[in-house]
Image 1: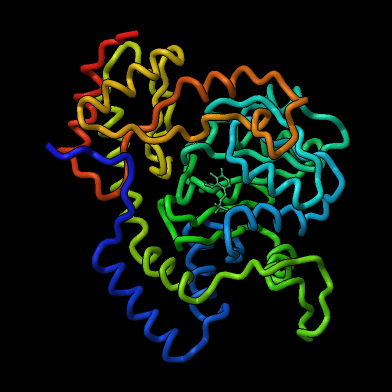
Image 2: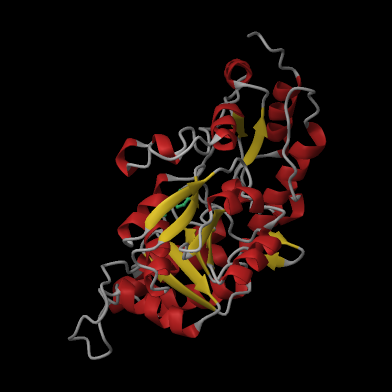
Length: 366
Ligand SMILES: Cc1ncc(COP(=O)(O)O)c(C=O)c1O
């Protein structure tokens, strides 16, 4: 029996055809720099998430850095969860802010954010790990507003994820999405920033174009080459045209896992199924030994376990220089105990059922 891959990049035929049609036009016209495909991507993405504005950029990391730069918080502390991608803190450092870590496992919560908060803090970053929104998101925004602190969503995993009909990208003052190759919506490399502020959206477009003024001569803000090419944007638009169907398929697979997984030692965190993006399906075990045992069992059953979302929390990432912060027990526990099961929109029901059978058949051999 074939091994079930942890993840596969697959484009439906209609997406490939639409992309090739658009790519041919880009090549014929010779317009490679941001043009109609970028503009259409921005319009369609803003509509998808319900944001007033969207600005395409070259990566999710760039979107985060630009969010902090347009918010003009340079030099100030920014709260970042210890459990996230290197890029979240990298962007904060590149924007010349000071990352202050707070403890978080799967979900950021007000208690942990509050424990790290000081009156100097300019912004709080929440990360929607795996594409699931913390149940406290609305309250976190209110908490930030009460303290006059910006909320920035690192929505890199959360395209289309929602709580009570409100989608990721609209809870924060600014939000950043990654469009990297492993995401549910991808331009291979790319990112998009969303905001309710037209001023910030205009500033973001200026930053992505090396900070150029409208005269094209003067560099008036410290931007960089953070543009998205028309070819990348064309791939994004081709997927956005059928994105709701992709999302529906992913959330059905998540429901199938939730209904089928029934093992006393495999915990499924509280998941707002209908509201997740379907980027990851995450389960947790009691401890690191159990996680290793589950990994071995899945591999023996022909199910490739996915890499952990984040196996090493940020305070233990040498390049970031944040090792003097901590301890972060929730981040450490999550890193040591979570397992990502195979998930992508082309995964068949039969394959999902084989994964479920494998999980339910696990006996801890530790
Ligand atoms: C939570 C999070 N933030 C930021 C990024 C950076 O995105 P990109 O690789 O598009 O720069 C990633 C990448 O996967 C991520 O997982």
